[in-house]
Image (cartoon, rainbow, N blue to C red):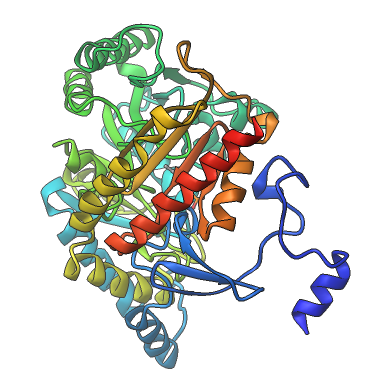
Length: 454
Ligand code: PMP
């Protein structure tokens, strides 16, 4: 009934077509996904696809996992939700905060604040970075520094530290005191192609920016360990350790936005850990509950958390909290999902399968006239499309070519995401060799078909 009503409303069309709207995310009618299993999804026509998209870096443990469903149902049988605003809480929220502190023990994790998505987790991090400085007697430290190509969500704080004006411009004025420095992007930067020199250079830019702003006015530096929405930008290996050094030099807090990289996606349990760095604050969402129930969390290390210990903050009062804070169903889903992440070593699988995926797609750099670079880390892979290979000019997203390639890939049985001039792959972390091969094959065919259209 749903299908026939839908078809009537859309003049018999139920397969989106990229020509309908150059932005696939606004395709009308959209492709309706009705079910999923493991690394596959099935649409309204009953066609099954390899999920190379993972529901926006989200469904790390795969679709329709029995363990997660059972945990949600078991919690529903007890109580779905209870607020924490009357000196109350629920067992799963206590268990999940303990679990996160255990998983991030290496990072010195001490306190967790829950929320419902990544934008909340970022907002909480920014607010508490400021609160930390208030409580330790340096309220003048209110500024944030971030990277020009970064993405940190859609709330006002997140927008203020987002890199691209594309995200920010319609909502200005934003938070005062937010500035951005260049992204350590080896493929596209005005400085150097040498990764180590680039890491040095951008770390120096951060040092100068803090110095220029006045160190006693800067609250924190925030960045993604591997940029996701910005097109899968993997910084040189020495960049994060250098950032940690610069932050320490000036006492500036380091916030790692792990909304995408958290829980294995970049091949390590946390992205910053993958670079050998301990941040002060981590923003977590997406993979925490693998998309089964929306969840977000912000994890604070002992240094930041100490500001709300009794000696510093005698009332212990924290002016913060969402209605959904520590939602019992979200926490129950997260506990089950994180159990799978650990039991099945999904960070290890992401590292292994990500390498195969990257190697499988790398030949596109030579075979396709529009592929400038295939890059990635773990199961974050980006195919950078260019209009001029020598100059590395990004393909104009308005011409819809990325959408067309994604559309062809879909006809070949794989869902991937066109994002500007990059095609992004972010499959569930449970993906196996056979599914990786299907993804690679679908994209190879899609690029061959696309070449004929050019
Ligand atoms: N931070 C990063 C690094 C993200 O990639 C995203 C979302 N893609 C967010 C924050 C915002 O998360 P959400 O969409 O769940 O609000």
